[in-house]
Length: 141
Length: 157
Image 1 (cartoon, rainbow over the protein chains, first blue to last red):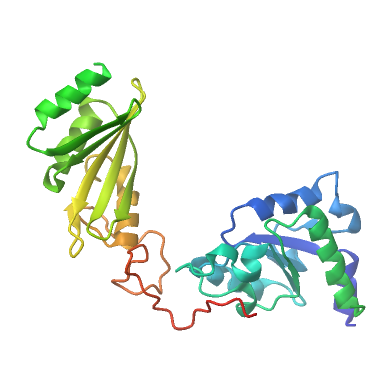
Image 2 (cartoon, one colour):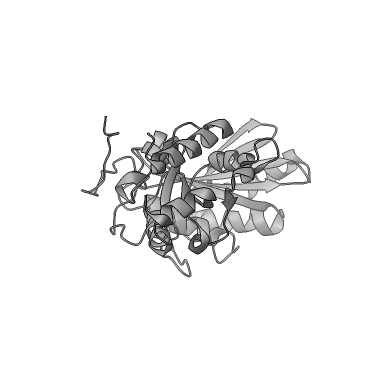
């Protein structure tokens, strides 16, 4: 494993991007930060800028306008940057698959490392997804 | 004025413009008017009856395209919807953006999604659609066909 990835796993900073979601997944992500789940004790912190982040969390079905912004954000992210898709919309666009404004799923736009399904996924599922992502980078999966 | 007085007043004042008045419930009234008299009736409801312009909604109804302009009169708790029916081939109507500014953006949205031409609109250009969207393709029309050859419409399983 590269040193940059090893350093990243100790405390992955997370940037949260909503590409036109219904905000339900975003609420569940915020739930992870509340005292009940408190994902910050594992070093995961919401970063205010993509330039400080190691992980890009994406919610929502990417529409034609936000896909451009998503690509631009991914280009600005310091590499290695891990991408996590949260919720059915960003996995496969869910009920918006035939929408005129959502032509492509997320993983055809940028490479995705972990998928967390659910509509919305529970905070437990998001934490399990984070654990799986770290195990995957370590090469245990 | 009470609710009945306002409705009778509208019927009498615009008897040549109103096609149909549907008194649906104590809170909802639908008034179908001729498209050419929209500005006259809407100005009266907005300025003289002091109604609030809530929103307008465009519907593609296959035989025609209709627009509903929703006005609420708050001291009576009544929602008045002005209904206009437009020709489906070449939908066009006078703009209300000169009368009240709230109509500006919703008319731009109906223009890009349904292809309705608003005559006299100060700035009729796209509001929400992406830049690469082709001209003359209106996504909320019932005869909309996919134009994007690169779009993927299956889940890959």
